[in-house]
Each structure stands twice: as C-alpha cells, then as structure tokens.
Length: 194
Image (cartoon, rainbow, N blue to C red; front, side):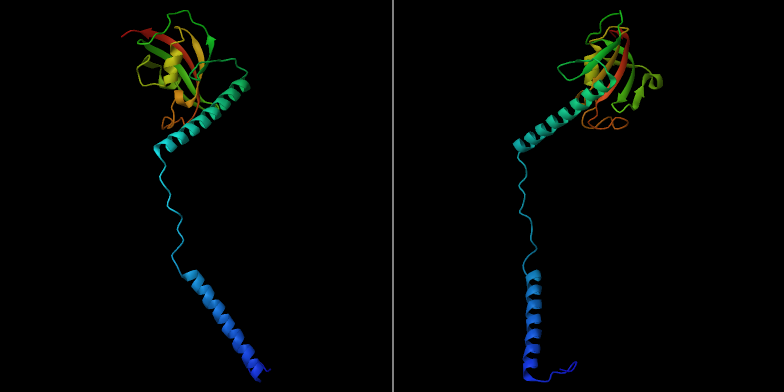
C-alpha cells in the first residue's frame, strides 16, 4: 500500500473498520463523561445537639490532657515542687509573708508578672502598675481569685493556670493566645475592705 492510497478491498475494509472503531470508542467516551448529572456527595445531616455536646466533651478532654502534660513537663524542666488544687491550678510559695490572710470580698492589690509557658513575658506590674481587684467578684482570671485566697500579705507565689482558669478559648485578644496555660509570679501587696 502506498502512503495515502488504498489499493485493495481488504485494505478498504480494515481501514474502514479501524475508523469506525475509533469513532465508536470516541463517541462512547464522550457520552460516558458528558451524560448524567454531576455526582454530588450525599447530603450531610446536621449534627444533633447530643452529638455536638459529645464532640465538645471529647475536645475539652483532649485539650485538658494536652495542657496537663505541658504543665507537668514545664514544672519538671524547672525542677519545681508545686501543689495542685482540685481545679488544676498549680502553686508554690517563693516567699512567705506574715500579714493578714486574703478573703473573698476584700480588695487585693498585687504585683505580678505573667508568662506563657514558653517563657514569653506578657504582662508585668513593673510596666503596667500593680493590679487591684475584688476577690471573688471582679473580672480577672478565675485562677487568680483562687490563688489569692491562699495568700497572706507579703506572700510571693508562683502560680500556673491552665487555660480554663486563665484566658480560656479566646486568649486575651492581645498577648495571650487561645487555650494557653500561663504562669504568674504574684506578690500580695495589700488588702482593703472598701
């Protein structure tokens, strides 16, 4: 067979069959991929309230475990001996004072430094001035309310607060990230009733 010329009937039949075969295959492939609707994933049912609650509990348990591990490693790395409260706060006295014991309903004035567990200093009374708050009522970290009630005037304490006792799910929107444990070095300077 010369290039481009068909010379006998067998070649015509073979040539026609191959062309027809290619056409049918091409048509089949085209139809296969162009027909029908786009496949859509099955519609997802929204989670029930119980499912959302169960997932929330699992996430909180996971994060509590993660933070406890992080805090315990931090304490171990610093070779500290700390007391843990039922809420998960850890504390140790750096210096014992001899003044009056702090009580709920009193105003406490404290000097402080607040660190992330990576060592970053976030806030300090040396820069921002002492903090004064009404124990058990003012809007400060719940772990700080708990810790101050363990102190006397003059006490200096190191406190580690897991996020649920510090700035929680959102952090403080400035220097303390979401879900971060923090370490306080705090001194109770004074107490007053009004």
